[in-house]
Every structure is written in C-alpha cells, then in structure tokens.
Image (cartoon, rainbow, N blue to C red):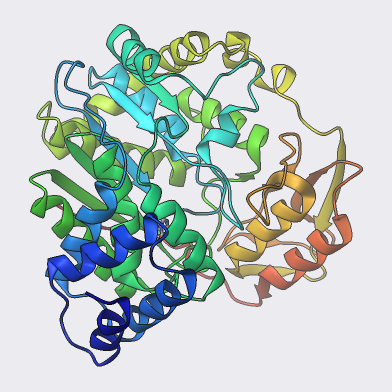
Length: 434
Ligand code: URA
C-alpha cells in the first residue's frame, strides 16, 4: 500500500477501507508517513469528509494507538463528561462533585486551556497545593476511596491524536466534523469510562458557531459511542455569551464554589444540573427528571460542596478554599473597569472575543508552551438582555503587570453590542439528545 494512493482515493471522493485508514494513521504515528503526505490526506478529508464507517475506523485506530485505560477496579458504572470548550465554562468543577455526591463515581480526565477557551486542569491548579498529575494507580485509588478524582491526562493516551491534532492546527484542517468527532471520542474511549455525557457548544464562543453543525457533531459522537458499545447522551448548549460571569482561572473556581453553595448564576446551575442528571441516568441511578431533583437537593444540603472539599483535600489542595475562596485563591489586586459608552440594552456579546480578552490578560495560552497567570481574568457584569446606563460597569478586568490591558479593553469594546431595544437572553440548554 502507498500513502500516495490513499490520498488520491480520498481526494477523488472514494470511500476508504479499514486497512487504508489503519495504514495512514499507524504509518504516521510510526514516522513512516511524512507530515506532507498526512497534511495532504487531512486536506482531502476536509473537502471529501469521512462517512460514518470511515469515522468509526479512524476513531478506533487512533484510540488503539496508545494505552486504553481499564477502570473496572472501580465498582459501578463510570460516566465521563466532555465539553467541546467554551468561554467561562467551569461546569466540570460543579458537575463532578455534584454527581459524585449522588453516589456515582467520577473518574475525570480533563484538559488545559488553549486559545479562547479555558481548561479545567489550569483552573484547579489555581488552588494552592492542588495536584493534577496523579499516577494511574493513585487516580483509581482516589476514585475508589472518595468517589471522585480529576486529573490531567495520565499515561500514554491516544498519541496519534496528539500528532495529528498538531498537524491539523497548522494546516487549517481542524474544523471538519468527522475529524473533530474522532479526535474527541478516541480520547474519551481510551479514558475507559462506560458512558459519556457530551456538552456540545454552539454560538460565538464555541468551536462550532452554528447550531446545525454542532448538532451534526453531537450526533456523530453519539454514533461513535454506540458503535463502541458505550452509552452516551448530548446537550447542545448556547455559547453566545460567557457561561456565568467569571472568565479566568481563580475567578472561575470562585464562581464554581459559589454555585456549589447555591449562590451561582442560573445558566451555570441549569447546565450543571442538566449534564449531571444525564450522568445519573446513564449510570442507572435515576431517570433524567428525578436526577435533576436529586442534584438540586445535593446542592441545597451542601453535600455537593462537601464532595468538592474532599476532592481538594484528597489531591493536596488547601481545603480552606471552600470557605474563603477570595482569600485562599490568588486573585490580582488591580482591577480595571470596562464601562458602557452609551445607554441601552446588551443585545450581542462575541464570547470568543471575551475569551481572547481574558487570554491577553494572561489567563490563557496562545501556544501550548505559554504559561498562564491564575490571578487574572474578567468578571462580566452585564449579559444579553441587561440594561446599561452610560458609564456603568459592563465588566471588571483583574490584571497584572504582564496583562495587555489595552488590547483586552479593545476586544471587549468590539465584543459588546448595545442597542436601543431589549433583547431576549438566550437559554443555555437548547436541546438534550439521548
Ligand atoms: N477538541 C478535540 O479534542 N479535538 C478536536 O479535533 C477539536 C476539539
């Protein structure tokens, strides 16, 4: 078999066999197929797509390129949650302890921030002492003992995706639905859970801007899960404005703790309960509606908050963060206000620009190697539908000496549209697919 012929076949829109897909992915990982041929192959896929069967083979081959975790030592069904990434998306910090407090073990592997979206691992690392790198043994042990662990990727999971994703990033071939679905699902499947809840975002702050594309992505990922004999459900959630108010690491942890105390923003609470109830349903603990009620009670009784305390303590973090997050977490002292130039109503927010503004303050990474500053970020005080007076604060920027404040303010100015008439705020949960 020759890479040239496989590229040609896909370029001409023909269907590839399992062997051809294995040949390309396997050959690339082993260094037998050079970057330029894989890049041409990915571009052919970008224009010609992979059908469901090809996507299945692609996912399967990627998943098997490294270690596939076995979590069977942890009793009961393990349900993982995945978000396609959004601005201010701190739901894992709420959902994981919430679901664990209802008795479903949460063995969660999370990612880091890249570009305009944040990452759970960076957020957790703003808690002094919190260790996100546990050995596989410690990870499993913690889930068995405490019912919860959240770590960065352990082991050698899906090396093929690392290599292919980097190439996609450099060759404008990221935003092809079959490639995104196989990239995400190969990692989820290798993580060893029995079921998956997928939070697929659409809107200005999401990867997939359009609802229909996000829906296609969700359906394809559900199909891949089913092909692998796993249960899954998806939520299509709106990202036309930041989720909650906080964007940036320490600030998002504070907002998540407030939500676990019952004082969080409605959109974050609503999405967290929806995702959590689906996790309970897939774990066979309760149906969706009863699950919502159970989780609401876990918030009210403080059990979810206590589970968060247990998580922090078990992974070496300072548990006083639960009682006094503003004091324990590093937060920049210098605050710059972004205020309204005219009166009216917030009618649009380009959430991606808000995410980039937070990134240029230092809360995110432009490149993988960049270091992030846990102290900085943005608190959005006005969201879609809110009225504003001239000169009123729209957002507060928590800045350090290294923050590019001027650029952040410019981005926020571009992000916000203020109109004369009121707009209806978007609802966060647009559709649940199960
Ligand atoms: N997230 C991933 O893990 N992979 C993609 O291709 C896109 C988003």
